[in-house]
Image 1 (cartoon, rainbow, N blue to C red):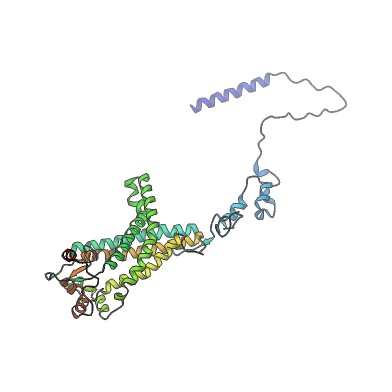
Image 2 (spheres, helix red, strand yellow):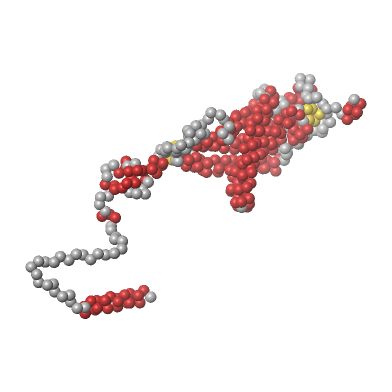
Length: 394
C-alpha cells in the first residue's frame, strides 16, 4: 500500500515538471534605461519560524531568574513560573483573611522539614511519608502481633480457672460508682478504638469487601462518633484515675510478681494486693501516661484547646503523636480486656456485679483477701440495698 502511494506521488511530480517545461516563456522585459525591481510575492496564512532563532530571547535578560510574576508576564505572557517557584519555597502570599483565624491562608505549600522517619521535603509530604511508611504498617503489625499472641495463649493454656470450690461468701470488689466509672470509660474506649482502626486500616480489609459507597458512609459515621466519644473518654479517664489511684500505688511484692510474670504459666498465681503489678502497669502506663498523651493530642486535633494556633504543622505533629500513643494504648489494653473477660474465670462477673467469691479473692489477690479477713478492708464497701422482705416490713 505504501509503495502504491509512493508511485502515485512520483508520477504526479513528473506531470507537474512536464507541464512547467511546456509553458511559454515570459516576454522579455522592455528595454529601458533603468532596471525594474521585482517585489516578492506575498504569501497568505500563518508564517512558521524557528523558536530558537527568535531574537531577542526573554531569558537573555540578566535578571530573568529574578523577575517578578508581573515582569515575566510582559515578556512571556502566561508564564507564571516566578509565582509557582515562590509557592514551592513556602513563601506566604497575600490573603484578606485575618491571621488569627487563618494563619496559613496565603501559604499553599509548607516549608521543608524532616519529621522522624521522613525525607527532607515539604511538611505535607513528610507527614504523608511518616503516616504511610511507618504509622500504618508498623502500627497495624503491632496490633496483629498482640492479638495473635493473646489467641495463641488462650488456645494453648485456656482461661485461668479457680482451683478451689466457691464458698458462697462474697466480697465486694467494686462499688457501684467504681463500676459506672469503669464502664463509661470502657465503652468510650471501644468506640474510639473501633472507629480509629476503621479509619486508619479499614481501606485495606473492609473497602474491598464493602465497596466505596458503603465504606465511605461507615467511615463518616464512625468519624463523628470518634469526635463525640473523645471528650467522654477524657472525662471518664480522669474519674477512673482518681477513683482507683489509692490501690495502685506500688507495694512490696510487686517486683516479685513482675519477675515471675504473675504466675500465668504456672499452676498458682503470685500473691498480690487488690490490684496486682500487671494491673498497676496498665494503670500508670496506659491510663495515666498514654492517657495524657492521647487526650492532649486528641484535643488538639479537635481544636478544643483555647489560645493554640492551629496551623498545618501543629495538626501534623498532633496526629503523629496521637497515632503512636493510641496504638500503644490499644496494644496494652488488649491484654487487660482479655484477662477481664474470657482470660480469667470470674473477672468479668466481678466488674458486672461488683462481687467475687472468697475463693476467687484468695487465689488471685491473696494479700487483699488477707486484709479483708483481718478487718483492715471491709468486705461490704458500699451500702447494701434492702432486700424485698425488708422493704415490705418497712
